[in-house]
Amino acid sequence: METDFIYWRHITPVGIKVEEVSGREDKSGAVWLAMARQIYCENGRDGAYRSVLHLASGAPLLDGEETRISISHTEGLLAVASLPKTPEADLATFSPRTAMGIDVERRDRMQVMKVRERFLSPEEMELVGDSCERNIIAWTAKEALYKASFEKELDWRKNYRIISLPEPGVPTMLKGAEAPAVGRAELIRADGTVFPMELYSYYSDDFCITIAYSPKCAKYKRG
Image (tube, rainbow, N blue to C red; front, top):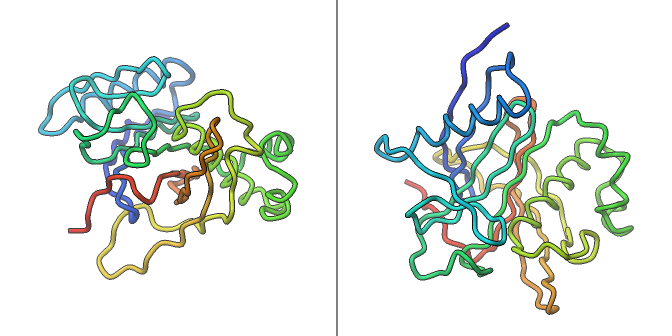
């Protein structure tokens, strides 16, 4: 059955904006992704078209915008997370002010269970347990930490350390809602510097979305 693309922009309870594009299940692969990216680019602020560029590190950015963004996609969902403008920070380098990454995965992807020893330390495997749901959250957390790190040669089991998993919360800010149950992590860079990170997860239909971010990063405020 053919469906339209669905575009949704919202600010998460942790103050990071996420834009989601889903739908058009009749399309697949590169065609679907190209169309989903086009939908995202057409929905810029005040109707302006947005161009996505990439830094030398491979990190995405918006042409002419001093805004940290992070992009993730899987079959059927494209998600783009963004922070408020940070003209005081250099987007080409790592900074706790702009350290943020997002990852998405299908909630039922059992393949994660077969490869989890590659990205989880023994301590993390004990923490996460044998639940596919919790392993999906852990996988997306590691991917999000990787994107926030700006470094490609780190050890996924040692340099991206999950201390506690988040409990999936609501996707958007609600008045009077309780504070989200965030997880804790550490990002250990190549020079040995340790940066505390937070993890936030939520479900969007059949997908798990996790954001890794520095407690010091720029955020949108309630209201």
